[in-house]
Image 1 (cartoon, helix red, strand yellow):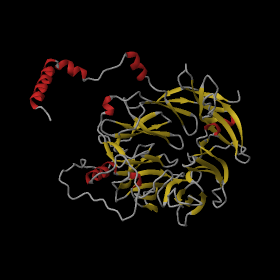
Image 2 (tube, rainbow, N blue to C red; image 1 turned 180 degrees about the vertical axis):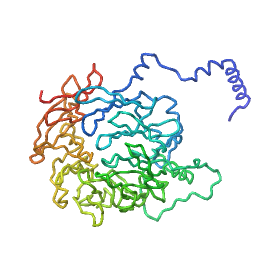
Image 3 (tube, one colour; image 1 turned 45 degrees about the vertical axis):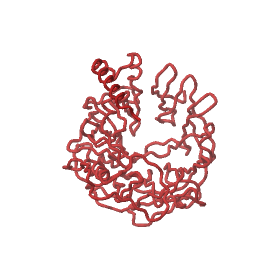
Image 4 (tube, helix red, strand yellow; image 1 turned 120 degrees about the horizontal axis):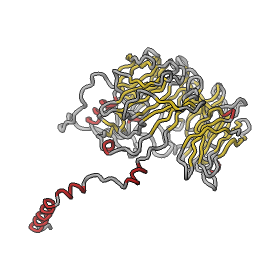
Length: 528
């Protein structure tokens, strides 16, 4: 029971205290700065990130800011279907950014500045053109996101006017169309109205239904809750596709309004594969499980083929290694002009079911007139492919229960041929980790396996040991399974290979640091 007279007396005392000490109370609520020494440590800029041009001639250094200020973390945020959107800019509210770019010529070591960069910019979505003649990035202003292009011939940054970028979805909001110097870009819908306003008198009930089947559901954050959320999701994710010429900065329409979750150009730049979301949406799962349409268009924006219609996936089984039924993981084969690879579950996507094979890879060559070619089956869950030569690719598979991963070689020209296992191990066994295969850009600008002249591959890894991690570079012979150690990091430095510049002649780019020296980049000659 509350004794009300005593409560009134206590409230009066608190009111008098606030009247006596208003200035002190106000000051105590303000943000305080730490000691200048501590603040200088916190605000110290991180080591720039290095990004090599496709021809390996230039190192693009992207500067990173220190911790974000309160004005950035306090911005409005919409949480819709697994996305976190900044409504003022129509971009992501949780993404990091760069605050400056500079260039270093690898051969001479000379530094070059890029003129025309906007002051105080927040740069994201950095990407080189496949031929290395341009690189593009987005810049976030207080109220919009713009696309910028830098020509390596003049080293001048120029904005693309007339469009605002829609960067609400995950992934890059544009893609380069091969070596054409053109980009397909997700832009805001023209003449867009104001965002939907919430009404507190609903038009009808929020209905959720089932078909009588059991459907185990995980707990997800930021799901759609009602029709107003659906309206907001449609408003902020809808985009039109435009074609941008990097050399002339011209913009022309490509495709009309849609909710494009991903864009991907074929290696030869002649085709564009899009993944677009379709209704009905769901209140139970994020947007990645909404119905999808996978389509391929030509350079004129004409539909070439609907590759697949993917149904809503609310009933994916529980457990690590569970996946949706039907085709998934659509991507272009990196060493072919226009071949799509995808995967289909053979076990219904249920890791608890008994099955000899879990997944199967399929290949489908443009113009998609014939049926897809059946590729290898995997005993474990499919984990990706490293493309190499016409007759050589690396395929990965994994299983959560026993932490097992299998790495195999297979021949894309004879997809039915049995795979050859290279490694069958536990991914928790760090001491015996052989590392990861290194890749390089091919004539299409796609990353494929890096072979030496004798057909051997290069591998780098963390090199876990009793003395700590000692990153390494190996040469691996897939025919014999033997490795040759080319280099290993040694104390007092922690050093790791970032890029293989001219590894056949012993030249690599490393990132090195120690207890006394901050991280920096070095060109290392392995022969010397």
